[in-house]
Length: 247
Image (cartoon, rainbow, N blue to C red; front, side, top):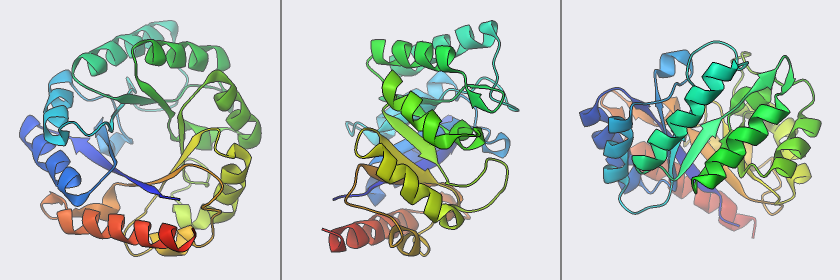
């Protein structure tokens, strides 16, 4: 099977977004996740930044946009939920193909609200991804079944507890369990300190023929200028090489 590559781009200015998304495009990324304020673990970017990313990513159908109205926890008020719905509308108008969000009720998924947002996303023609709020739930096996049942398309996880700062490589055993459980019913997107050098060791521990899988990288493809085309390209080549060996 082919393992996809997603590059997370920090949305700071229109010029920077255009430059870094174009680099990800040339490097061969399948998808880009656009977030603002990565120092806060990612917030919703402005509409003009989404439009700039759309232009830079061309017709490739992989522009994902973070929908997170504030930093902190993932428990949102009704007013914040309405704001997230409005942000989704802004994203699709600006050219997004998908949105990335996650809502919790304590240490469990906020099922009603997640279902609402997923329905709104699909109603707008958007791919729905649950972000790493998933890694803050107490029972991931149950949460994964809930997400699949409500129709979420992708789940982003590091296989490690949210806030632990552990890399995805340390969560390989849990990731393998989730991939087997998903069994091609939902795409698993793996993020957490991944780079061209450590991805092979992680993928070697995962059941690559079981379902849809994407690796997600942010800091691992950065250099002094921002997103590095050489690192993105090497990540893509390395990932494809490992996946090809598992066929």
